[in-house]
Image 1 (spheres, rainbow, N blue to C red):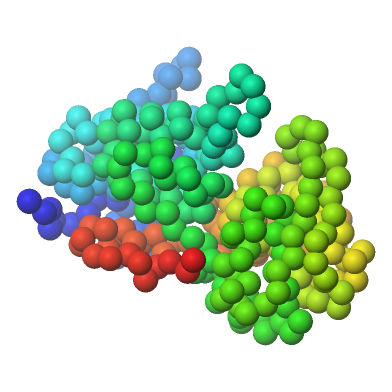
Image 2 (cartoon, rainbow, N blue to C red; image 1 turned 30 degrees about the vertical axis):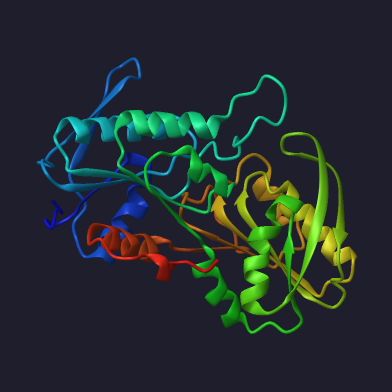
Length: 312
């Protein structure tokens, strides 16, 4: 039997800034919940209103610290024990997604572990955006609504009216993502080939393709320390590019990211509010994902198709 009562939308502590925007776009008030901490750092979550028999959406990005993930798990468990009809975890930024495979001996597959934890906590569905690897959807035994930021960024790029536009992938693994933009914008695509000796440290990078006299847009899912992005921008300019911009869905922006971006030839870094910005910069523009999440939440709650929300 379908639940046609109004959806209940709740937020974890660190994603409240985005949840409020989603609720405003959805046309409802954010649900009331509490988080109380003990002196040793342990915390407990509770709902201040009934969720019995209701469709419950819990919004929380799992960026640092890990407390954000555990708070989400506790909120899911509390909703399940309070007899919620359906529980949907809305995770705009899915942390640990870079650990999607065993790429060296004796390492964990963190993304699969997180999937197991969410399932064990009691979710009926997952809603997220721009996973680092599409195959992570297969780690879940519940429906996954994997949204793509291309539906936000492609109209933005069209509005710039850039001539001689070329799309760039910062690595071989991102070619599928960059190809979506290239096809829809009817432009050429180039690829950066990079090698790493360890995480966040690039050993060597070369560009495959012609960028001379082109306006280049680098497409990525995450900007962390900004090493790859800024090095790619320098490489493009040295190869004769007219300008370089970058798009990255999730602004992790850790460590030396601020200094690297400010000192780079990047004209602009366009990102989203899936994670709150760690710092302000005249080079960074954040567009909101609130409207697309609100629309998909509405359609899921009303058992409607969400295929119109995808540009792939």
